[in-house]
Length: 182
Length: 145
Image 1 (cartoon, rainbow over the protein chains, first blue to last red):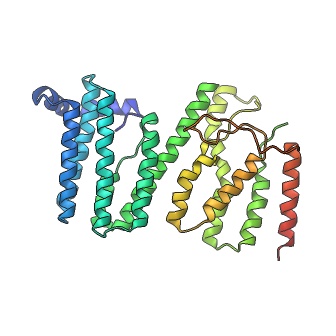
Image 2 (cartoon, rainbow over the protein chains, first blue to last red; image 1 turned 60 degrees about the vertical axis):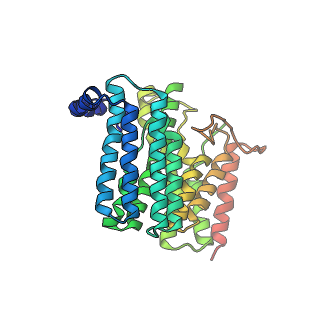
Image 3 (cartoon, each protein chain N blue to C red; image 1 turned 120 degrees about the horizontal axis):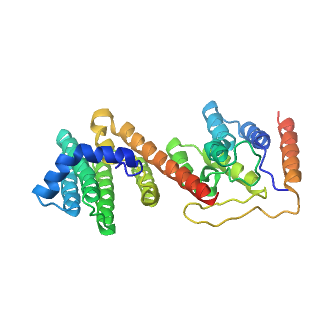
């Protein structure tokens, strides 16, 4: 989550340490298993969306989001980082984001235009995220907050935040490139 | 000698297009943002420049960022669709065309590809191209009612 800012990431890891120990040492869960648990909660959230039980959907997506943080932190804390684990985490994230987006569209909550624009923004940030590790996140939770603040506004917010993330990625990569060539 | 496109030339071209297409106030803001103010991305590199060179004048420092390269169409087109306006794309393209007339190196597809190019080949110096463009659009501005 905060891989782009190592000092902050270290603080987060210390803060979450008891939970990470419990998940990995006590429950014997690998980072991949935690990613899968995150995905399961994500799909339960989407099922809640289909049933239009919005509060439950927000709770489940928040739990999914927490497990999404725990998987990466566990992998780093116990030195279990693998490219397969990273790919699994990314795949689960993208599948959940696109499924949630499609579900909201099929339920008639959002227009085709904003559905496609958010999908494009997600693809754009995904194309660079692996290089900088910068992604503001907030996509799934942001989409679901639409039930409280209006879906048009919520999805517009997700679109702008994700697009801003892409622009920031472009700037950072260029800055790093210039710096390395000096 | 290779020089960068003068902001004044960008401004005079943008002014002409704004007046020619009779843009609304909202559209004028987009036009200025993508036609002229996008050049402010150079400010991002100031700390890097001063850290490396201090107050020394160094030519060929890469001030440009991908924000004014064609790769930025990837985010500007979706933004324009969201805003229901063709203005950001058109003014961004006008900015790019002027920049690509100049001879300094550019990376149009960075960070996806490191390909580097210099300019649209014309047998004119950069200074001459700037002057001709500026005078041409100045005249066009004067011709408009």
